[in-house]
Image (tube, rainbow, N blue to C red; front, side, top):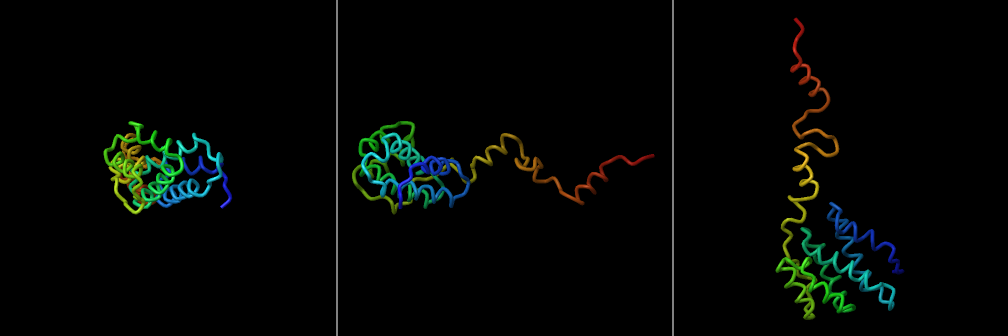
Amino acid sequence: VTPCKMVMPLWLDRLKSDKSRMIREACAMYLGTALNDWTEEGYLSIQIWEQVGTALTKALRDPAPTVRQFAKRGLEAVNRMQPDVFDRLVENSDLVRDVRVRKLLNRISAGESVSDDVSVASYGSRGAGSVASRRSRVRGSGNSVTGRSAGTPRGPQRAQNNAASEPRPK
């Protein structure tokens, strides 16, 4: 694999915000692979290590177990190759508010292999409480793409309903 750190911002963005589980899995896997394989000294700056470590730490709350597994593998690489960066992640109170995340990071810091462990729950991150479903609750029950509510009929059925509700001429 030829290193190309220009793709990392795309992977980071998609890992954080994409609704597709497969896309988030691929991004977590690519980020972890990049950290493991792009070992040339100085190729990845400390800021890149911190950004990727932060994104992977947040991915520990993803509802998809595979995303969490890849995030753990990536965090193991951060701990192994940049222990100072990993220590800052562990000490960041905004990232480790969840006790389970803090415990997992402490296990990684202690050298324990956790990548096969799919723990750390995902309450409140995606799934039933997804970004899209929160938007629709805020805007009302309408579909954000069509502007129709789920109960509004389409096509001929809508025309019949509209005709039935119009007053008849006298």
